[in-house]
Length: 149
Image (tube, rainbow, N blue to C red; front, top):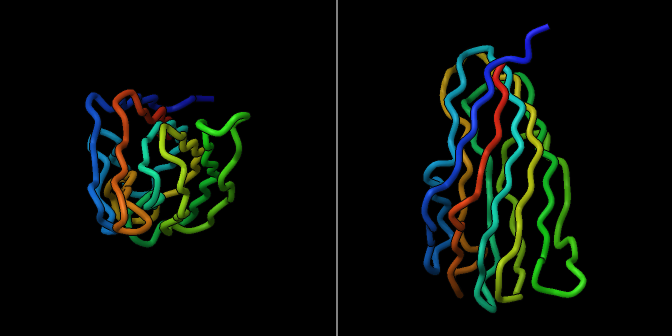
């Protein structure tokens, strides 16, 4: 049994979205996927928020995929003890957002399983503010650990 091709992507610099709800690609956290290929991804993303504005994230994939599972959790690492802000499992690519109003550094953790369809493309993390009241910054050191088969 083959484990596939293992790839590791690490974000080398902070990336900010200032007061915008429009999703943007997270530079460095993107992996190409071939037609009919399978991907298993572990994603760790520390990010900072202001005192308002919240967050919005989405994992985008090529059109007409066969299967998509994203089990994610967002951790408020500022509040003591740390608390889960949100946790869910998605079965299709869609934005998830929360109006978290705790200034500081938080964490997004995703375990993603994708079976791609006939369309090659990229699997990409996108992010934005939940409302245009403040900014969000995805921090350097965020990473994707990917196995493609």
